[in-house]
Length: 103
Image (cartoon, rainbow, N blue to C red; front, side):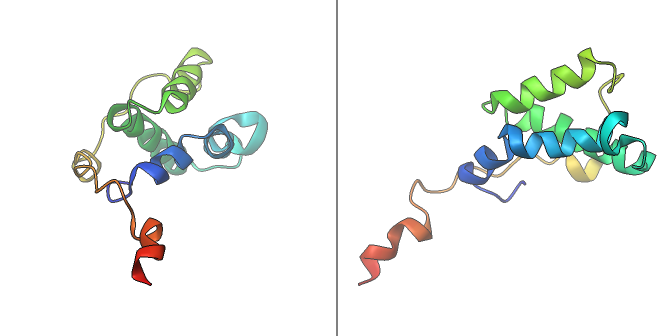
């Protein structure tokens, strides 16, 4: 996620994607079959996104909902390997947007 651009961040911030991650945590869905390590990692990822992707309101909302429902009891302690801040924003035009210019 650190190397991805704004477009990918927006895709990850959609409820459709977030709901699939949340299902891994909730016992009603996949939570009863998911290992504790997987649940911890999903929680770490969601929490880190709330810190790094503050402009993605749906990520913030989804994490708050997990806390409110008691699924997440406390914010996880992020490991050194996931605390790296995201890189600076890339140029506004992606390579895919420049297809017409190559001709």
